[in-house]
Image (cartoon, rainbow, N blue to C red; front, side, top):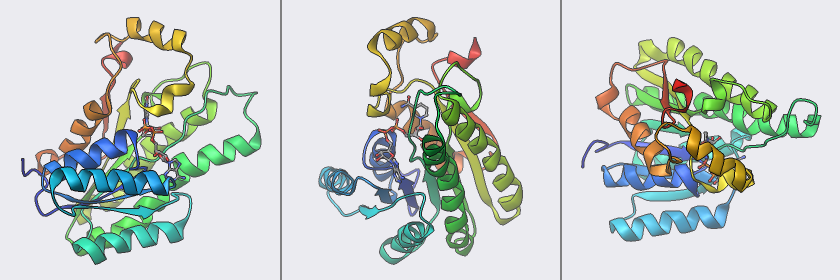
Length: 250
Ligand code: NAD
């Protein structure tokens, strides 16, 4: 129950889905958490719900557009001001799109790259100084199985999630000597609002393909991220951790 005792975590895209599930789990393990999102009202509601359930003020909501360095500075400052520092960053915010290579226009490309790829770099850039002051930390970058394998669509999404995998390794090599660990997480098909755009027929067919024969839940991913945040993963850095029900084993 105390795997994150005395730790402070910042989660981007924490208003709903996997980010919200991570915030809930981290608090139950003793952490203080700042969640940041562009969905300001929902982010505040999520923080209030978690605080009410846990009976305290362990979660705080801030406005965070991950494409804006100034927003990241405010979010990292909030961790220090409210909870005394920063130990864990989960670069979770992301957007999904199913457009193939020729159907992707420049505006869509730039939007996806800015949020899914630039946002991860900016988050790490703003977080490392605060982690250094604590003598180390753990950064978890949420990629996807789409960062490991290709498909007929989602070209920009694949590109950004693949980039997150190697941004992670580059940062792990650079900051290992400062005890800042950096790992990527690669979820498969996870039942959140993000995949509402996937046609129902396609989702039903995918159920039969996944070896565990179900979609993952936000909590399935959150438990892996908890492991990477905690000291139980103390010798893990620069690695990719897959949580996909066996999808990429085939
Ligand atoms: P979700 O859509 O429920 O949550 C994503 C959150 O990111 C939302 O709250 C959204 O408001 C926020 N967000 C979007 N743009 C933002 C921005 N510019 N700044 C800050 N926040 C922003 O989806 P989810 O499934 O919880 O996704 C979490 C992560 O998991 C994403 O990086 C996604 O790519 C990845 N992922 C999801 C799946 C899946 O099947 N759901 C699979 C693999 C990877």
